[in-house]
Image: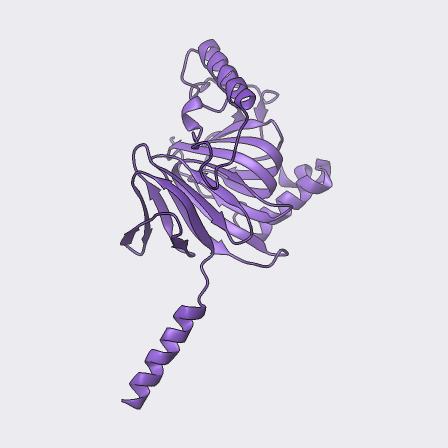
Length: 272
């Protein structure tokens, strides 16, 4: 009996001192967390831990904030999972995965973070960025500020890319190339909601105009551009050694982040 009481006390103390890695600041409509098959509803003030997958329904939104200050706005029909977290600035502080859907995130300072999708691994360094996974074989990335290094590999192609502010790419099993970021991939945050990564009216209008114009010119919704491109037109498919030699110090540091995370190469299913 004494042993049982002691065990209960130890478990109780552990639960008291256990610290979550992120907090939910805002939700709209159905937002849940799933860990090991156990689902719970999320609302403002809910805690998130490593292993939690934040899942949003149709028309739903969620804003979360990591303990290191990183903000993540999660759009509708998304599945965003927290893989790892460290409070040490020298470590990769946040490792996450976007299985499907769309997010917008903003890191603090030069925090080192990683984001995995079904086709690309991103090393993030002091960044404001959007990512959109409309299907398991496609990922769009748009970088507003900071530096990102991305790596993709498959049976038919292996590619790397260094992104700087203003860049927008599409990664597939076949490689990485420049592409407009689809309007449908943008997270329409609620103005004034806690944790929303704000955009000015001018930025929203400009992004929408550019996206719509490029979609009209290509005759698609922005997911086209599946036609073959020359090597000069494509991004990536470059040797990592060459990349490091040509990179700036920030870019080289971003590459080091992805190598440290041991996610520089992802296996992808080839369509051929």
